[in-house]
Image 1 (tube, rainbow, N blue to C red):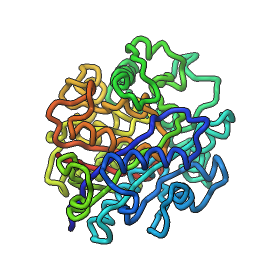
Image 2: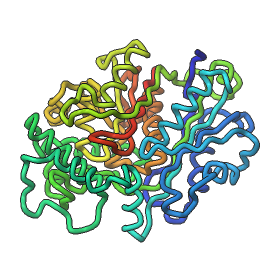
Image 3: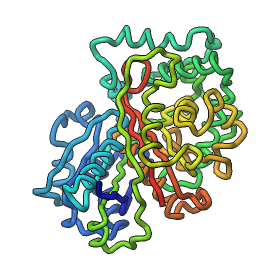
Image 4: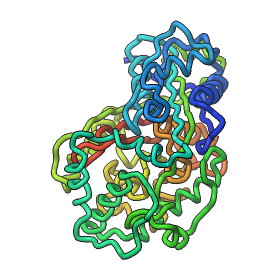
Length: 412
């Protein structure tokens, strides 16, 4: 197959963009990526557009990408809309890579944009309700919450304010991890503290305030063991990447040495499994296949961005990806192994918890960070001599795991 490269990346700040539309956010990210890649707009041969909630939030259920990109002058080229829950943007990137590798085009755009923030909080939080089986809600909720049995939440550890049901599900997963491996709430707080510390150095992060472990633990509860800083916020934002083959790269004005090679991509859906059968978790299986595809091992990874919709998610994914042994995600975080300067820095961007989580843009936001790292352009959050980077982005829920996981390996 044709080799594929990330020739450029662009991203808005993630956060609340009350005065900006999906079209505005798309334009900002696309203009940034065209500039970064040294690419003229008329050189783009196809575009993959990711968005998950505009139908729910605004009633724009169809042709979202055609509308967002036409507004800035894209016409006639193929535009493909991608919805894969929180993995929508990474899926758009995956499809752009396949497009180039198949020889269907030389220069392809992948862009994700999301506008989730609303004064109507109930409307915002209900946007997640379609990310699992709407015909099996009560049974799904009972099955997922049952994962946390055996760990009794302390009195007063659940918020009376509205929040996404997915936080209850993550809490169930976290309590299962506590029961099975002895993980502590303080270790989850160590992940959150670490990510808030990383975000201080990220000018595009939604939150840029450092927090100590004790401050995280003392923050407002959501649902045990989660407190507010351990959870990703509601966010607006957009991110984009330009994917090229060798011929396409040669036609761009940008410096070729800044292009980052796509070493491999994996897109997996889940399967029926026992709740504690982690060897058959879709992320574990996707990671093993990806490492084999790229000819690398977890020990080769220098920096990773993983799907930390909560701090619990980061610990789970760090183990499933083989970056730390099963059950060691909490202790590794507490020892500083996943912090900048540690053995395997994770979520140097601040992660979803602090950088933000506009779900249709999140996956390419991860790629933005890793490209910056591999180029050596991440400034105060730079991992020295980073050469191989891994992104993991999950979406939705079926059974006892994510409905979909998309993994990307990049190399310098």
